[in-house]
Image (tube, rainbow, N blue to C red; front, top):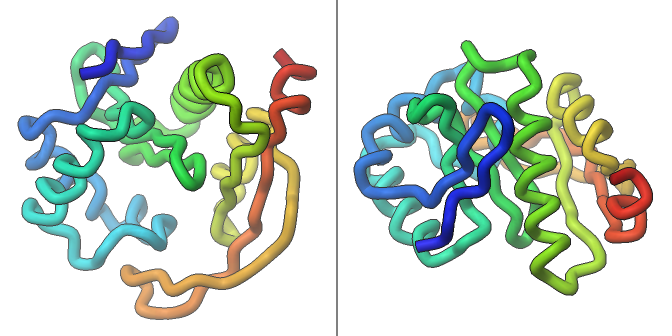
Length: 167
């Protein structure tokens, strides 16, 4: 199991089976799930156990905890992504978690580019990505299971050179 990535306020640790109930309860909140097109809807405990089984073999998928309280998730794999439960929005936690995992990613991999993006209308997510150094790289659409419809996406890219230039 990978060591936690620690920040001033957060711990980015490996998911455990003990997270399944919290994960299922928190990620299915409408105000969270509406922005997450990759998340099945409805999202139940079985979905959480399946996700955790995959995540435990990937050191780049982490639970975000604050004082040992599970508050969201962050990952770098085929894309950089994150989510937080609503009471923790607007307090800099997403940027802090993102900065920590991207620092570790660029320190430990040879990858030169990280992809991400956000749904149109998600200004808060756009702000987090821009603070982390991501730049617009195109647009597209995807199906959002929660909304039951196609949603427009803004794709964003972070290069190693941009990351190194800003840190």
